[in-house]
Length: 481
Image (tube, rainbow, N blue to C red; front, side, top):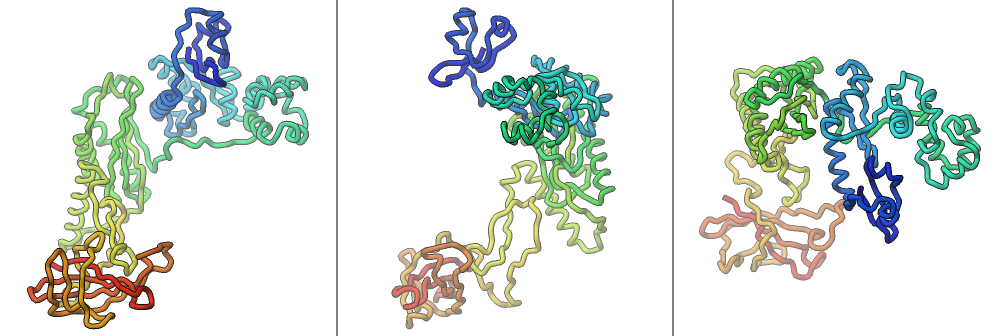
């Protein structure tokens, strides 16, 4: 028996069949329960652990259908549309689910109906089984009004009015009942009767493509796992090819007989239908796991999913080597991401801005790429901006001939640099559409400087003289190679 503290008292939160046989009910105080059954085994309720358990069971049930949702407090809702025929029909699917739960030492009730609310009401308050299509109202009308799971005061008021079943409630005027008991009660009634449908929100979105293999006996041979995955990947790639698409994100899921589910997810930098390349990425991902793939007592189901797909047109590599080199780089990125993790393989991406701080940023190398617009200097000319930037820019002491002119010399890290050549200014005004304050609101005048030793610097003066500040400050922002 599980108890939790409620209103300064320990009350029963959940109990087993033996406790129910003593007449105990949820909500009863622990003191009253011990008075009836002194030798009760009591433990503190742990809602977080319960939620984690339900999530594990939901993941386990994804072997029956990819559309699984939690149904609090202790239920699961499965959308069997398009999946029941894999098990020989809805009745056989329901039996398989209950048997799988029994192997995990769980007892449960299951009902199949046309709407989620009807299935929940029948499983919790009615007769288990399969409701024929279109007959939800026939099977749910005899249910007690407790199936509404309405607040206690609503249930009491309905009972005192002589409305003891859902059928009694359905025969009354909906307008009068809505005015008396509210919209939510009537909406719940219409959904249980099957007059209104509300689809479930699954824990995971439906994949673009999904193929799987079920085993009559648990699969234990990890050395042959690629022999199972190869035809599955080939089948999925065939489906994508008929659609004119290629996969970008993939997942292999392994459902163990003890309820554990292992998932290996990997991505590619470009849409792909290459079976061998995907197998290689799977192998690298499996080898990089901290907790190696463990079949335990065996896998019941192995599933391969394409989580994300994009248009992939047929292309032919020409005589030039450039296309092949690009493919080699993409393959290298995919292998590095599979081995070290997507978040550790980065590349630079440009942004449409004149601000050098925001002109480039790190993005995942395997993410969709756009044509880079890196500015290239004219042939034989030095670059306009350095590759190496300081973050933040480093303050320097300067001396200029005029307030708006380039410095004649500056002091940085206790070393004075005498300027031989200066180019500029390149004026960069603040981006007015950004909600920034302080220093980011000041204009910057950038100069390219070269000292007498040949070192080249990129410096800027922050703030326009007199109009923005009385004493502009100088900073060293970058170094040219």
